[in-house]
Image 1 (cartoon, rainbow, N blue to C red):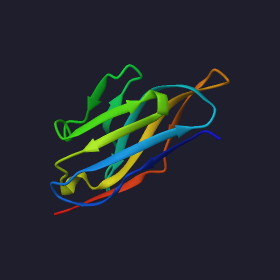
Image 2: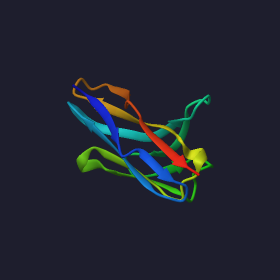
Image 3: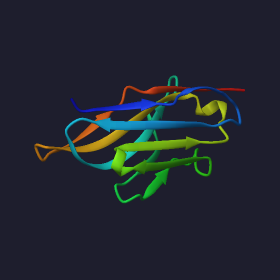
Length: 120
């Protein structure tokens, strides 16, 4: 069974840090683009950061300079280091991964989400 699972969320005070992880598992041949998205109360899901298989990155304007995305292709794992957290970063964070499976096709998978809460 192919799945994408996030971990690392929690409650932190403003100014603190958290590190999220996302692991893809199952019959995966390769992973293309990966990304972190978030959805706060009453708002649409937005891109936080993305990373290609070659390591090129992009960030949402609100997190530039505070968050860092990375991946370990050997472990099918992606990370999001979040520093200088603000209350407005409070949201459910989702991992997205474009997975190429053994049937030769590429599918977009989402994780179940991990809650990040930043207290003021």
